[in-house]
Amino acid sequence: MRRMDQINVIPFIDVMLVLLAIVLTTATFIVEGRLQIRLPAAQTKAAPQEIKPVEIAIDADGRIFCDAQSLGTSAAGLAALEPLLNALVAETPIVLRVDAQAHFGHFIGVVERLKARELDRLTILTRRP
Image (cartoon, rainbow, N blue to C red; front, side, top):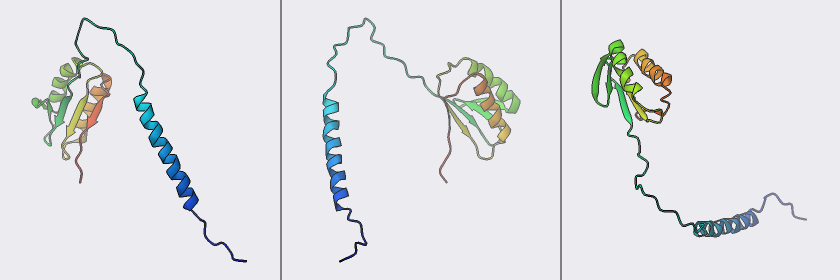
């Protein structure tokens, strides 16, 4: 009697292909089977406004910029940033760019002020090496 040293995977591949075909055909029926709902008319035509992101940057010398406007360096820049942050709503996206040579304390100062105002939609930009 001959000994079986290998597992035959051909039936497994056949079953997987059949399952894939079933998934693909039912996926097209799901898309086509949308609910037929007639939406009511509204007087206003305004769509929800998308909030423009605010860009905050810190250069190597510690100067802080908000939307390309220089606010000053170190403590003076952080103090000038506070009224601008107070005017923002919590859903405002913030983009933070910090120079690699900038002092880490400047970065932490900006992040603390953002957290204090619950501005947590923060994106920190980096570059690929």
